[in-house]
Image 1 (cartoon, one colour):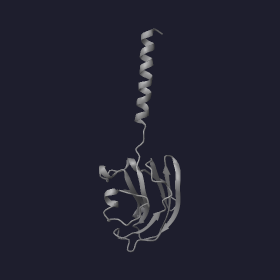
Image 2 (image 1 turned 90 degrees about the vertical axis):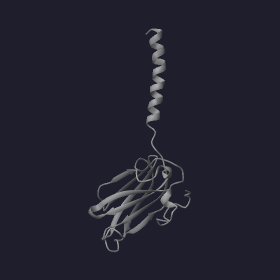
Image 3 (image 1 turned 180 degrees about the vertical axis):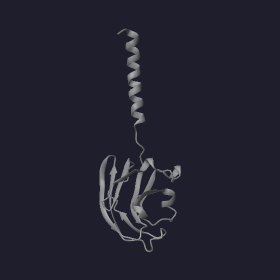
Length: 159
């Protein structure tokens, strides 16, 4: 190997390695709370797993009563206990309804409905609709502070 090839390889490898590390960083968010909302006219059993940076921080199996009239405008809700801390991390919430298939949602990657300036602190409502549809509905600090949703956030949340 001549001197020129040695110098080129010596510069190229660290630059490529550094670029690879930057491209692999996962988006993070502060998880302000999680609750389950049942919009169906029958009771449900739902398993919820909350992962933080690849480690499970909360598992819960809950039964949520039927919505009052099943019209899609009323619902019964159940808050998930906040067992995680208040630091930003990569959060994934998994849920399965009535022992069915697991559905996962990477929170920081699915914030299209949250305004950009309110995406750093997010609560998630897991909504259950007819046909056993599971929807993860993120809500940013703009909604958490206006009083438009019940206070089901973790006690340490500040927006």
